[in-house]
Length: 308
Length: 308
Image (cartoon, rainbow over all chains, first blue to last red; front, side, top):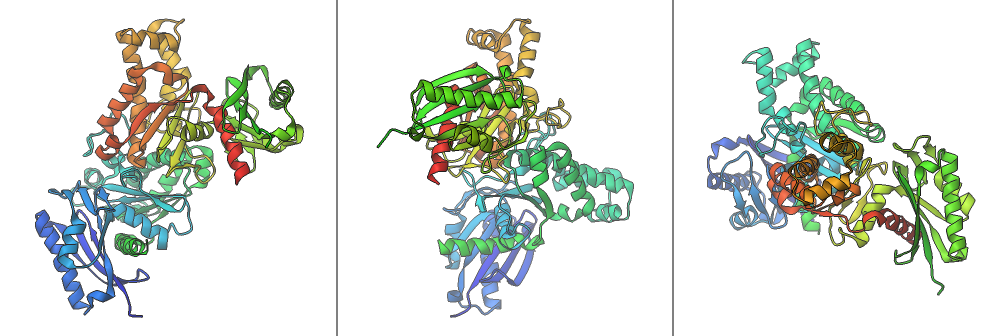
């Protein structure tokens, strides 16, 4: 049997990643580009097409050796029809039939899903959530995304929109959120918000990586900073574990690299705030697949769709 | 074939209900007692036994015609082992092997589950949630309980403790809750809290039924009262539909009789606070089985357990 490959795209608000995976979801090649260099929807779609074509060329692949293309996008998606409803952090996308457009251009089967859902699938299939039954995967970046594993399967909800943990309300009259509500988790722990808070504490040149390094050196201001971020996350997660009685919470995305001080603060808050049975059960761990989770999930999506 | 019957008990913080159901879960006979008249765990267990025995006697039933006994209790339960972990509103219950104790006394198969989960099963099988796939059932009483239908099945979570919507945090520094956390939904809309608020507005003799009647007569203070209760419910439900992308929310328990003003306020808040896709999808309706939901659910539990 000829070797079969899968192509995967992870479209983020900041970076566009492209990879070639083998049939067991191992990454054979990957590349990354700034999303901003494609400044319109049409340029971005053409950019994705060019990336895929050049990957086929560079890797000397026959089209017949490629099972299909999986794409993760940062927003709500009709995954069966392959339509992107909208992308909160990339302007100009509204009800775009991305699957059809790309299949016509690239002449391969294309499957599309929300990026946090793909990260969740990847962590459950190959990462930190393997062998866990009821899981929330949280990605901490510009936005706060999430995906749910319920009874060992990805739970999509009635419109494939389940998992939006970033819009868990923490305070009735909290800061206004991009979604139109007040006090959403994202308004407290989204990247923009915490970078702003870090600058106020440590000066305009500080990076979150530096605050993490300071916390590891026992700098009290840095420890307090991450404890507060963990406290907000722990508060939302307490409400979620009360409701869902999960056995695992996986935390990924840039902020998950903050180190033990963040995870200890999350765990402490859950023990303090969540109900006894639920708090006792749930483990909180860092994502295992790191920045590749989205790509691996996109590959998994292709494999699953072609099976069924 | 001889006709088969099911016995059902709904143990509440206030009332103990007992009923005889036929195999299609229709109620043939029922009775209700004050829970407080059984002032210890042992008296309550003996009370349940006596109720069941007298029902058998009164209805001239042969034990061979009874499939089993289903019992709903207001607290977390290990439903497979039939152990009651604890009951927040009935003192003295801790890790009680109620199934075994009652089976020895009554010589019939006994099945136990949490009351909100049984209400949810009943509403999904025979009530307002029939034909809906992803549902939250909320019961508004002394406590605020809940149960989840996910992909057409009752979702139990990792310790059969899923569904605790009453302990959804609405404000980080809100009122202290019986569960030890702050600002839980129950601290805003639990019966004790809203009766207290009603008395402050309408005088010491007011009942919630009277406030509902006043709202129906367009009394502005009464309308404002229920709008505020609905606002708190809507806020928690917004977070829950963002996370779970449900197609239905069913509201039962005493407070659900408040009338349209309550439901309109809930719906308005969800449209204002929840994300667009999720808010557009979800319907909010009153429970259909009313105060019998717990009993019907207990009957359903027996039927399902004996099938499997």
